[in-house]
Image (cartoon, rainbow, N blue to C red; front, side):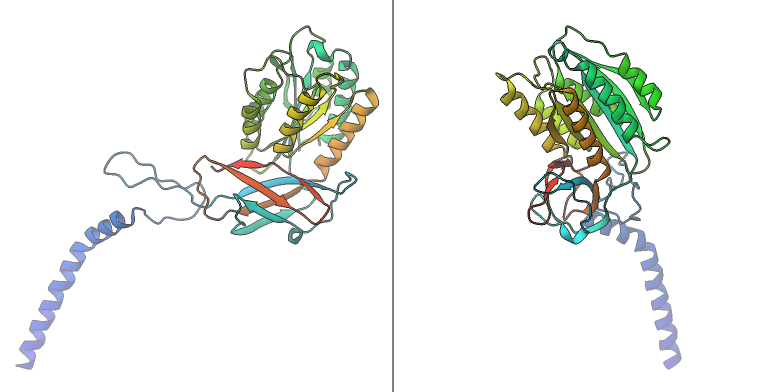
Length: 331
């Protein structure tokens, strides 16, 4: 009797096991439908693309790392380069980051640099010494085999005078070919153009990207609005350093306000330079700023790559001013 019961039990158990094995794919499919996602490896860049109504849902990387390059200055405007990670507070749309993933003072990342020179009719008086100072600046800043720079001249339209290179002779030659013109001034179109040109430099590693803009700040021809140029620079992580030759007393306030906003919103700086010595000094200070940058990388809390702009705030010790881009695009 006991043997018959055991045999019956074993037969019944085998049937249940076979039934479960047959149903297992269905159970897994139901679980996927309920959860709405399929857990895959967290290796960055792995995506599942939907190819039809019956395919699995698209899956993208949920965790986004944000890189923030910035400089710190004291109340006299001198660069401070000995601060530590613990000296800074980050707020992303008002929220602290989930975690800090990287910190470096005096960042030595490769530099991608656009030098954008206004050659419109309103700045003909300053063009010659600006060109001389810009050539010297590039020699001081760009490291051969590491960094890349290019040159843009603009009046009512931007013109690429020299594509990306680390060859100082090519860059200096391109600056020498810039001539005075009778055209009007399209500053924000030129900034937009330079931002797009910087994106054509394909890098597999993290780089620093900056635009040095030499102009009087009086735009009278751009098709792009100031906020459009500003947002594209923020999106592409391009800090804009403005060297302003604005010496027009009746229009100084409005022009300087627009240029200051562009520089500060992107993490650059605004410096007025109305004579030869001042231009050389301003570019020298810009070069020091590029050599004294901090880099912080962090994972934000609950941010998805949905294409929205996020407000960014970096705070430092008391009486220390932090210069950083004010927003970034979640992507």
